Amino acid sequence: MQPLSIHHVQITIPKGSEAKAQHFYCDIMGLEEIPKPSSLAGRGGFWLRLGDMEIHIGTEDGVDRTRTKAHSAYLVEDLTAWRHHLMRQGVEIQDSIPIPGYQRFELRDPFGNRMELIERK
Image 1 (cartoon, rainbow, N blue to C red):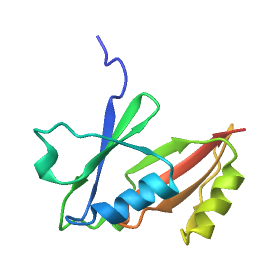
Image 2 (cartoon, rainbow, N blue to C red):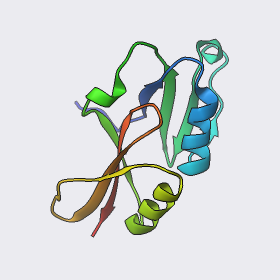
Image 3 (tube, rainbow, N blue to C red):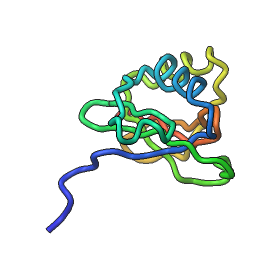
Image 4 (cartoon, helix red, strand yellow):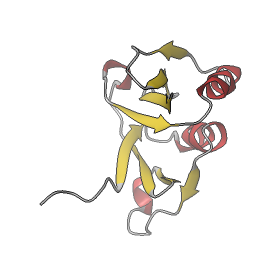
C-alpha cells in the first residue's frame, strides 16, 4: 500500500498579504488561481493549480520563513529565460548546488518561502 500521488502542497504567507501573494504567484510565476471551497473561504489565503496539482496558500503569522530549507520545486523549461524574467521583477536569484541531470536555482518569494526552479538537461 502506498499513496497514489501528491494532491497539493501548502505554504503560508502572513495574514492580510493575499494581494501581494496573488501578484507574485499569478502574475509573475504564471500560476492559475482556483476557487477555494466556500467552507474554507473565510480562513484567508487562496488556492492555485499547476497541471494536475494544487498549491494552497494559507495565512499564518509569527513564522520566520527565511530560516527554513523547506521548499517547493517547480519543473520548468528554459531556466535561463525564467532567471531573466524573475530578475527583471526584482527577485534575487541564488545558484544551487549542482545535481546530475538538472540545472537549477533558488529564490525566496516576497514572504521568505524558499522556492527552486529546476530544468532537466
